[in-house]
Image (cartoon, one colour):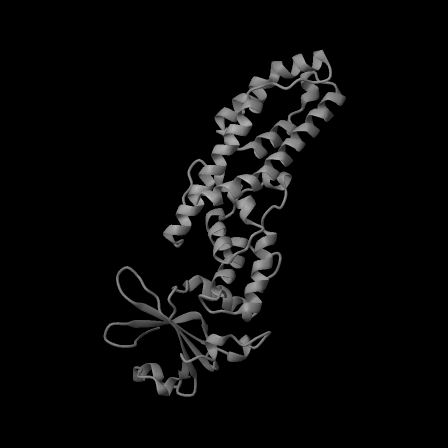
Length: 313
């Protein structure tokens, strides 16, 4: 249902979160490219009372409907409701607010199993201090956010990088340190890095610069290892490894631009069935251990690269 707030602004009742017995109206200002089309929600204040009542429901923007200069059609039957305008310097995303309401109404409660992109990130963003400022839920979202990313080289080698660009920006914005290293590695391995439009220019520049620096270091470190078949404990195994190195290691790496993806490439090398290529079991075991150690070395040396890059900024 569309209603007129004033001559310039149309508002729409949210199709899901408009309850006839609700006691609180949330008025969300939505800016579009063409006009202002706001959304109103009629909800129950009691749904927000655990574990803390959000400050935005108690602040100066919270008044009764009758205290506001609103269209009579909008006021009809709502005079006793509390009226809260969600008007913040950083615009609140419509979907983020719905995800938050889903949580408080029990439709999709935030949990460790929640999807990163569709649940954890929206709640992390909307509960932050620059938006609705709900500290307890924000900290809970932070915890689940951290759990969504690898914390060692082997896990990172298989990481798919769900919403990595936006996640990195949020990790920086909210000073969430642990995911920044794996996210930075992942972003550094991407040949086409497109940072989230909502990020500030400074944030985009910083992430892009760091990613480029890390990528340069990784290529410099890993290229000699990639293009040089390693020796083994036995001459026969060394010859067999060298014979298959080009088709099984170098060629796939070139095709995948993997010179700058050391963890993934080393993991792929470990997955090759080297026994079928003529290597003995002992040499296969030793090589896989060495490649795992190399993954750990890359993971550890990244700390130095990040510190050096930060010092240069």
